[in-house]
Length: 215
Image 1 (cartoon, rainbow, N blue to C red):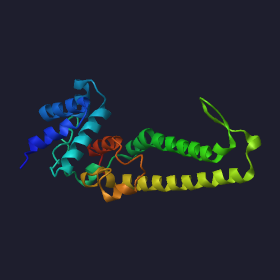
Image 2 (image 1 turned 60 degrees about the vertical axis):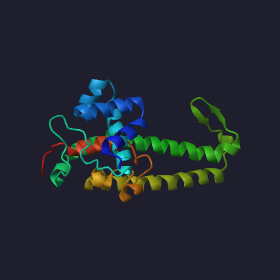
Image 3 (image 1 turned 30 degrees about the vertical axis):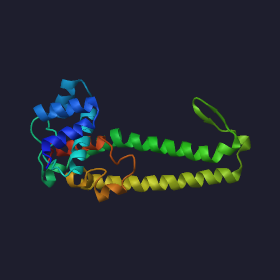
Image 4 (image 1 turned 90 degrees about the vertical axis):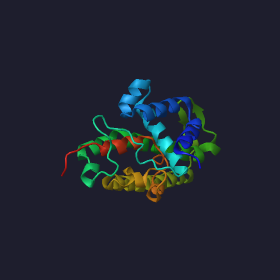
């Protein structure tokens, strides 16, 4: 039977050298993402990502990872925090959404619009340059324009549903718990593709695990 230590060595061998350094330091010293990042000269996001991948690979091998979580700046993260501890102030949640999630969503909208226009006008031999598409409106007919707008409308409606679903999950903290980890839980499958497996969700997990004002 393979020991836990052997499983850990096997998982480490599948990770990058930077991730190996992070995991090795964490297993030996523990600490918060901030302290580990400072000690190794990497970003906190890289630390979150490395620990996330390490836990995921261990779980795939049937290893319990409930104790492999980063500490906050003052104390260890509670494995089973109560409901009030999982809630954060509305202002904090709004800041997380506006600064970390909305930019991702806006980028997705830009990509969707760009792709839909590319599909519609590709056959029209539109001129391009480094800044993107230059639409020759003399060659744009009403039918192709209506088709583009219709396709864009469907994409925006789908994006809107995903945003509403994401907000509802944030309100309930459904996807920030260990049981519903991004990319593994059934409820996570309904999330937008740019949210599933996103290391920033680890940041949200840690944010919601820190002490907050109880209502």
